[in-house]
Length: 312
Ligand SMILES: C[S@@+](CC[C@H](N)C(=O)[O-])C[C@H]1O[C@@H](n2cnc3c(N)ncnc32)[C@H](O)[C@@H]1O
Image 1 (cartoon, rainbow, N blue to C red):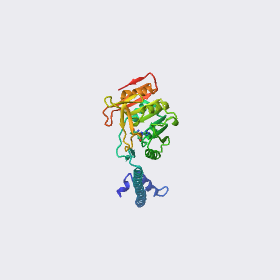
Image 2 (image 1 turned 90 degrees about the horizontal axis):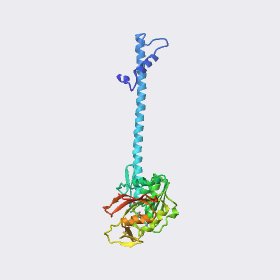
Image 3 (image 1 turned 135 degrees about the horizontal axis):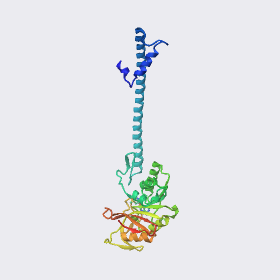
Image 4 (image 1 turned 135 degrees about the vertical axis):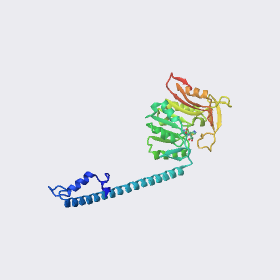
């Protein structure tokens, strides 16, 4: 019986009210001892019934909630299996993509300052139109698309573009378009004008970087470049008026260039190429001379004249 007085199950005030309800109109509860006992018993009975009803309701709700939780966990597991399968079917992947705390595609994913550097260098690219040549499987393209109005990804390998299209539909990125093209030859003008070009990991795969930089300069006033360069003490040759090193490309590598060789200008020659292509401001954002694949640099170049050249 004391459990009636558990304030969570039933309040003392309510019990008193119930007891009063037991009395006749005009008659005070407890006016005769016999009536009081009966009223009290009826009150207790009613209180017990109400409390049992509430307990039943609460337990029904509790089991409903735990059923829903179990269903959600099951759904999540199912979605994970489906997404895993969809990635496996399209593999092998170069890129790792993180969704809901899980990584799909390639197991590991490198963090990189490139997106941050790009948007800091060219704030106008946020909400703007961006061109990403060498877009691989579209992972960076989708990151760019989270901030930009529109992004165009250009890629030479159709299977990479298929994976990129899959990611695009998975994330519902309607502001992204991918095209298969050879960037050694593509004039770039057919995609319209852009606020900025985000060019990572591509230039050092091209046999003719001069032609590409000049075409990029013609479609956007801003160029973010992440590329490798030749050291002056390497065996250098001259190509298209630039001093640089010729590298043999590995056709088995899904990230390699489409020509048999690539040409890496020295860093000074790269700056000269940018300046000759019309970029009045060239800012070196990062220099990575000891990169394991070869000395590397991150550069922001823009049409802005008079700002000159800066190296960190
Ligand atoms: C090293 S990956 C860089 C991918 C990505 N931009 C990044 O930095 O993580 C180079 C990409 O450029 C593509 N590529 C290389 N040469 C190309 C060419 N001539 N035309 C089009 N795409 C090319 C490769 O297929 C590959 O996807």
